[in-house]
Image 1: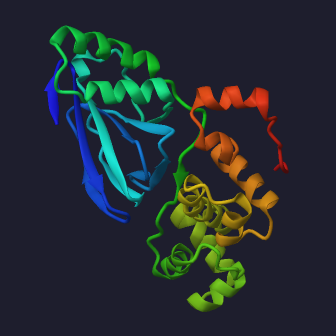
Image 2: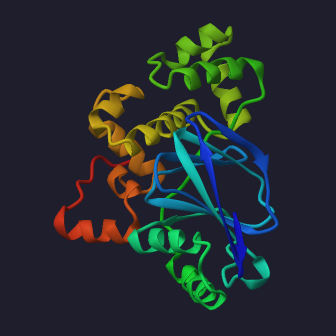
Length: 262
């Protein structure tokens, strides 16, 4: 880790499945990986971060960071009193070639103070929020709902209906419906969709075909998966996995196919 100017740069290797327990920083943090796939959790909200996106974490926000595939967490820590950005909430940003190169440049140990300060001044201009939403998977507290939730988290493709899950939990369909909303603020179907999409994102980031990913997380067709993804995340998987500038360029070369509507 190097401490020069107003930005500290750190690199932390993470093996697949490894998590850094919840913690916070006195500095703002930009979390990114050049390879692999990161996952950052703030409470029960999760961001999946392939190399084309990073996450801004304001100073003081408790978060856990892990790798769904082997990765090297590259963290930029920005001194709040010297940072022109004051975004109050965790915010995803696109990472294109220019930002990736600048991050690598700031990690160098041979920069003069003047060179470093000039590079640091450019960074905030390259951080542009992405218009996508994180995946929210609230954890239930009622033991009967937790039984169902554990089954779905273990196997997002579990095809059983709400009624079948209710029987397994020893309650009626009506009771489980009520408990799910009370405990998670979501219907059973909405919560299961969130679980499935969270499981799908690392597979998509690996480059697996959409049809294979759709089936692996419980969707009968790719079109049904794409419709759910767009409704929930706010964009298509392809655009989610591209940086904003790359995605905008891609609009000219490859028109987006809109599948389904709510």
